[in-house]
Length: 188
Image 1 (tube, rainbow, N blue to C red):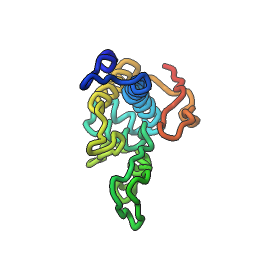
Image 2 (cartoon, one colour):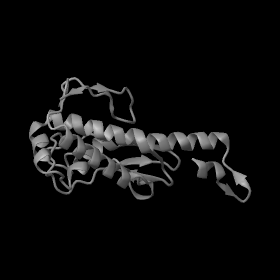
Image 3 (cartoon, rainbow, N blue to C red):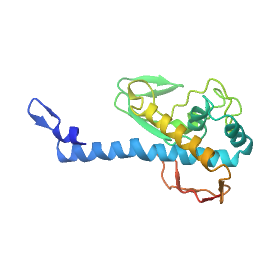
Image 4 (cartoon, rainbow, N blue to C red):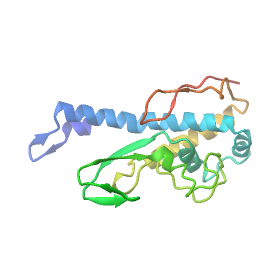
């Protein structure tokens, strides 16, 4: 944040509105989505005991985080502006129109993933769109992956008898863009 405040280009600095917007973005992108990833993964594991058992006995699966991101993406929607006229799937999109990308739906596309509504930590070729793509790929993607891997592995190691109090009735946050839990009651 200090670097943002001090940023200057040709004598011009960020306005208070620009600073505030960037700080909010950094908080949401760097914290909220990662906590949602961890919470969503723990819920998915406790709703899928065979996958929980698999992860407990295999300290870390290389494909687990990608499968968690695919199965229950913390970011469900991204929007973009068309830079030129284009036709996608038979639909004409005009330059300047807003496009809403439903990342959660794309991550469960049956044309891409067999049995997409099943959590499978051994699934191969998982390429979730949860972090975006191209020039819009999330700058913090690797950090989020590492944080989630460490958090989940540590919880499973330190609290092997952890159970969720009500995995059948999760307390989801009431938002459209981000998918995460308000609370995740658990006990040992």
